[in-house]
Image (cartoon, rainbow, N blue to C red; front, side):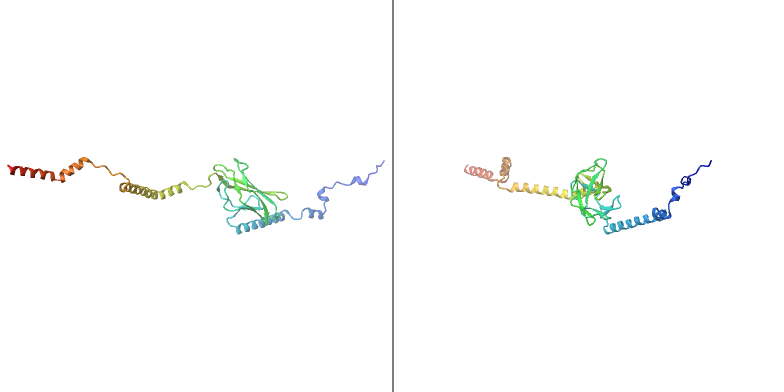
Length: 251
C-alpha cells in the first residue's frame, strides 16, 4: 500500500542568509566595513578641523572639554572665592544648538562634591552661552582644583566636563616667598631713612623746647656764681688795700 506524500511537507529547509535577496543585502549593508570606517574617520576629521578653526580664532581664550561638541573659556588656575573672574565665562557650541537653550555650570571634587556657585546659568545665543559674573563661593580645598560639569539642556541633554579647571581658596593666589623676601629687602633702605628722619625730628623737638619762652630756665648753681664773683670781681680786695694805706699814713 502506497501512502500519499504531501508536496508541501517535502520542501527542504533553507537558511535565512541564503533566503535574502541581493536587494535586501544592499539595503542592510550600504558600504563595506573599510568604506564605513573611512567615512566615519572623515566625519571626525571634519569636526576636528572646525574645532581647530574656532580655537585658532580665539587663541588663549578657549579650551577643549571632554565633549567634542563644546568649548569653554580658560579659567585662572588659582582664584579667590566669591571674586569676579577676570573675563566672562563662555561656553561655545560647535554644533547646532537653538537659541535660548539653558546652560548650567556645576563645580566639585572629591572634597566638595557640589560647590556653591553664583550666576551659574546662561542661555545660548548664536552658539555661545555667556555667563555674567560667574562666581565660585565654595572652596576647593588645599592643593585641589574643581572639575566643571557643563550641562546643555537640549533634547536629549548634553554634558561636557572641564577637568582641573580652577582652584578656589579664601585668600586666592599669593606672591612666592622668594618674591616677598626681595620686596622686603627693597624696603629696608626706606625704613632706615624713616628712622633717621624720626631721630632728626626728635632733635628738632628738643631744640624747640630749649628755645621756647614757656619752658622754665634752668636754676643757676650758687657755687658757680660765687666762684665767678671771686675770680672776676677784684673790687673788695682793692678797697681793703686803700683802707690799710690810709690808716698807715695817719699814724
